[in-house]
Image 1: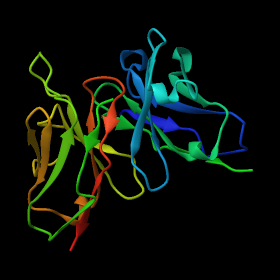
Image 2 (image 1 turned 90 degrees about the vertical axis):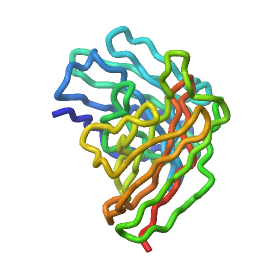
Image 3 (image 1 turned 180 degrees about the vertical axis):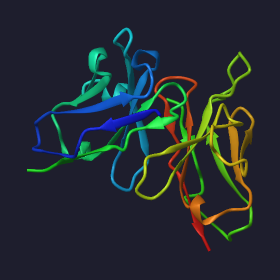
Image 4 (image 1 turned 135 degrees about the vertical axis):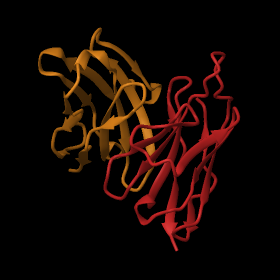
Length: 115
Length: 112
């Protein structure tokens, strides 16, 4: 069955970077784009962007273009998102979700930015 | 960016009754190919979002047929018939007509 297993919670200092992962299983990794979505505590959902793991093509929400970097490793069927220059505004749960239908979601990675 | 608006932050409902949740877009989501690029998701407490409806009116796999979606190019409705306790959570609409994809603010379904 399709599974997206995300890496564990991160605690980071302001100005630092974090890199989280989303390991896919149960399907051919390169056949589906991987999208990333942000959810701040008690808030709604924001689309960050996606990566095509087959070509490494990325599309970003302009709001996150200087914040997030999406990559993918075909050999391990894992998608990554790095967040740079962290501020308190980046404290959130980040989800990966598969394909154009957003039919499968990871469990989320909680990022807490605190001095 | 296309703005998605869910006017009702919450909607109370009695189990067994029906409820409609509304969503509006600032631009028509009707593509020239005839598809309307609107999703509905449910996020139960403490869980990841779950796809309910895609392309405005298509039921996602495994979703009970108590859920249905309808609408026009800019006004959309998710209808839940015979509401059950497990339907509690926040419902989000999302447009995927153009980048950046954007979500509505969510409507919380509460059981009376």
